[in-house]
Length: 245
Image (cartoon, rainbow, N blue to C red; front, side):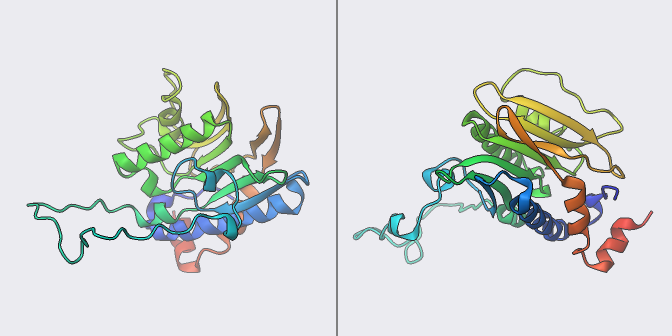
């Protein structure tokens, strides 16, 4: 099935597809693609590395919520007297995006992740910076990554999401081919990460990208088969919009 032009529809439609795709990938990984000592979860990792991200915690081990301090001033009752009060509005769908996370059953720590880029990851400078910073943080921690970006480069990533990530590691002149502006990328995490990049275009068939479990061992990730499965969950009206010439 050819990759569709997801710029034709709203972020909400892609988010629906994204969740279905992540779910199907997780199911297939857990049904025999992963070695028995590994398992996949669809998780929401909005922040960076922390003990709650790296290791699964049972409810009894989680710290209790911090009580509001006595003697402080309640913001709602007595807001500070400042001329301007501003609040950044995050992209709602980027904040809700889920990731395929591979954990090892011995200690339940993350060994690999798959991120599907959403429009909200690239439509603001902060969104792109947060995505790139998170990717770099995971790679430096030795976590292997697969990045799928089905959206063309914009003013903040003129050569695509891979170069934006790779620029944090090394000065490079990577450039996407002019006729292939979407990106599939697999990374081996570590102090000196390694990247495998496959540029594709709208209308292409997705190839199976390597998902590394260790720096020397990977499994092929069935992107095309799971894309087709997730596509069936897209409402007919929107499939017709995306399939139109």
